[in-house]
Image 1: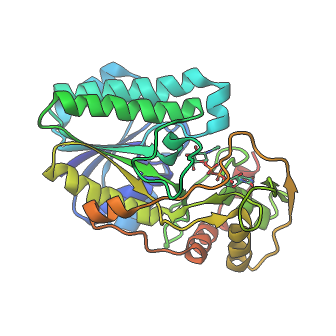
Image 2 (image 1 turned 135 degrees about the vertical axis):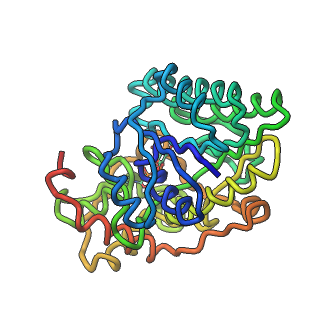
Length: 338
Ligand code: UD1
């Protein structure tokens, strides 16, 4: 297929591009490089062994999006572009509504006008908010608790309405749990801009002695060791799911949402221990107050993705931490300490 990939040089976009190229798809990637670098193109091509086209395009520019979709003859779109930080979304909600929601609406409208029927959308388990039942299934109520979560839930609704009104359309919304790790080649991974918000990048910077210690947000949750539980999934497993989702989108019509997780919950201390083993270094840490908005426990029931895509996450936590470390250990320290 000829596939438009938005946010192609980002963390999940870049890993997915590799898998798509390996499967023989032709890619046109776009990015505005606000949280990633055009240099990633070279690394994607090096890993995949095939070239693709990369365009500098901000999805908020409706005219440019319209022109691209009018002339591109795309079979499908995989839509990653957007912001992903809860705290930032509370402080700057309009950024999130413009970049995540409004940009997605204009992309979807242009896709409908130009009869691009198949869309895979990068959603998040954050649409479930603070779930009251575990594991989280796709039937768990949608109840986001932040502007970021609401932009993901609202975009899903927009795409669902698009499918309802367009008999040929198919959309798969992939609800990611906690992606970590990096490509085993150590050429692709997550490069946080500024101090990391997420756990793994922060731990790795402590391991590199860029930061002195990890703050663990809360040690008194109702979990086996008092720290929060999440479902960490290797980014390459996640990337593989997109290729299968694209195949399914080409064969079906209508809207489907799928959880992408391992189904296994790991606590912050479990992750810390796995990272100490992977890095061979002690990771200084201290327990501090809870972070507002954190759910005690969150892990997926990934059985629908297994059933519909024939997909299952394969990497375990030690493998994820090792791959993450092998990428991160080579990153420029100056870039990280910004
Ligand atoms: C966060 C977002 C989620 C988003 C996801 C993207 C919040 C509340 N949620 O998920 O919407 O989709 O990132 O990957 O921001 N932790 C520490 N110390 C740290 C960092 C994290 O103890 O310095 C803990 C957190 O309390 C949490 C766990 O580590 O229990 C994972 O945190 P994080 O990586 O930020 O992911 P989520 O909060 O699950």
